[in-house]
Length: 470
Ligand SMILES: [Zn+2]
Image (tube, rainbow, N blue to C red):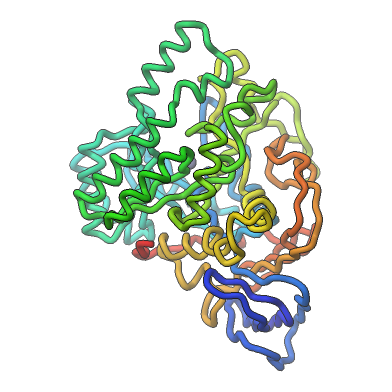
C-alpha cells in the first residue's frame, strides 16, 4: 500500500525543507520534490508541518503504587500519546524477585494491548552478584537501559557501590544507565520530621525533597560516570542547579545526558499550595520559577538532550468515575492521601500534552526552534536509546511514523480534549496554537483530527541496540 504526503514542510532535527514523502507499507520509501506516483492514499499537507512521530522516553503505564495503579494502561496511555503526536513510548519494567526475564515477561503481557510502538527500560532496584551476572542478558532481550535510584531508601534505591559496579558492567556491554537523582537519606529524615511535627499538606511533599538533593546527586552521578568511563542519563531534571551540574560535567568531557519534563518547565511549589495541589504531586517535586527558567535555558542552549513526560497519571478523585470509550471508570487516586501527603500516589498525566504544550509554549514562545523541538521530542531519544534511524528520522528506510502538524490550529486545551484516562489536566484552559492533525504509525493512519483509527495490539515491541552518546 502506498500513501503520498504532498506539499508539506518537513521539519527534522537539523533541517526545514519542502518535500513530498512516499510511504510504502510500513516505511518511508522516497522523499523529494514533486513526487509523481499513483498512491492508494493522497494526503495534501499544504500549509502543514511534517515531523517524525514523537518518542516519549519516560512513561509509567499500569504501574502499581500505594495500593492502586497508574490509571492509563498500555492501550489508553498509547492512544493518548498518539493524539498528542507520539508514536513510541518507553516504559519501565519493575524488577521482580524472579529476575530479569520473568520481569520482562510480565510487562510484555501488560503491553499486548499496545497501540503504538514501545520498549522497556529495566529498573535495577536490587544489586548482588547474581544480578550483576545477568545484566548482559538484557541486551539480548533488546533492553539497552538500566534505571537506578539514589532515593527511596529500602524500596528502590541501591547504594553508590552498586550503582558504580553496574555502571562498569553497562560500559562493557554497550548499555546506558538512567538515574533518578535525589538524596534519599535527606528525604527520609525530613519526611520523618515533617510528619512528627504534624505537617501533612501537599506542599510538604516538595519541602521534604529539597532541590539541592537533586543537584548534589546529579553531580555525584556525573562523577561516577566519569570514574567508570560509562555514560549516564539523568531522568526528569527538575532543578536549575542540575542543568549547571551537567553543563559543568559535559564541558569536562563527562558522558552525562539530561532529560527534563514539561511539568518542571511550567509549575512551582505554589501549585502544591492550591486546594487541588495533589494534582501536581510527583517525584521529584515542582520547584521554583528560577528553576523553570534555568531548565528552559538548558533546552535552548542544548545542555539537555530530551524531554520525556514521566507520565504516571492518577485520578484526582478516584471515587467519582469518568466516561472513557463509553464506559464509566474510576480508579483510586490522589484522594488516598487527602490527610497525609506521603500517601498521595506520586505521578501525573502528560503523555498527550508533551508535544502540543511544548510547541506553543516552547517553540512559539521562542525558547526553542522547530528543529530543536523535533530533536527533543523524537530524534535525540531515538539516538540515545538505540532506535535511530528506524525511529526519529524522516529518511527513506525509516519507519513511517509521521505527524502532520497544523501550525495554525487554535485549541483551548484541557481534560475535555484529553484521552489520558484521568479526571484532570495540568493544562486546563491553556490556549494552544498548533496541534497534530494526522498521525501515522508505521504507515497506518491512527489519528485523523478528532478521530481514533488506531487499535489495541497494533503497537510493536522494539528491540533496541546500543545507543549514541549525545
Ligand atoms: Zn519516572
